[in-house]
Image 1: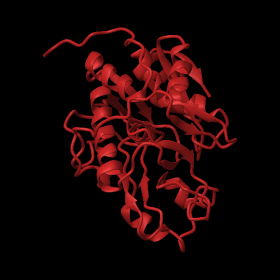
Image 2: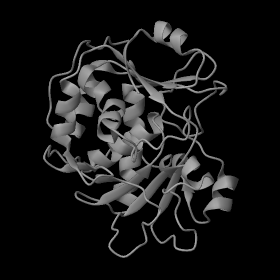
Image 3: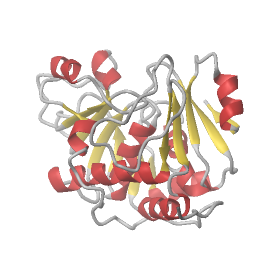
Image 4: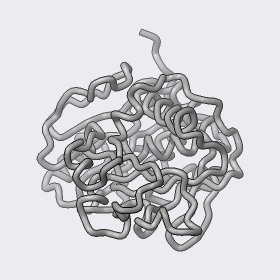
Length: 288
């Protein structure tokens, strides 16, 4: 087995370069680790990237840098090859922190897309996202990200479980006919990503307050932080993309591992084993 390098990857100005560099240096070292309350450990969903998902204890799942990159490549191929999205297009997102949200976000930024918060009004005149990707909770609840089922012309993908990304297909069909499960949609696509958008000045994120953030500024934001494993607390029914400090939290989830080479560990805020996770994962600091 070839030993990967260690330490902080060299600085880059765009997300695709940051991901490529991190994978080359760190391989299957953990990028994002999730702990889910009451969720059993299990195998990867059928057709998952062969680089594996790891995880050794109940309710815990690791995504190594290479494994995460496999999901990012598949997602980018879906968004570009099947849905025809390209630089400057918008993708509306909603969901709690976890590797599935990070993978979708990085797929979008690989292509130079702009992430905007899902509002449930994606079909309104003047609303221009090309695709809607939400967590299952956005359908099951009555929150603002739940779309109008009678007007679902915008393609809609749904992800779910924080450990393997899956959402129950029957539930999706009941709540939003025509929507597709994200893992099912991306799995047939290849692991070789489309040509990346190497432009750090592209708008990567528009937050709920209308503020814009480029790829470069988000990368600089996390580059200014300290090294070490970061704990990211997940609140019940949280929508990270619309919530307070969404730019900081989304960058901490999706970009900080690429910049520092250290994992982000997502833990439920109500988890009674939080202190134990902090010790076992060697968490140096918390957000949330």
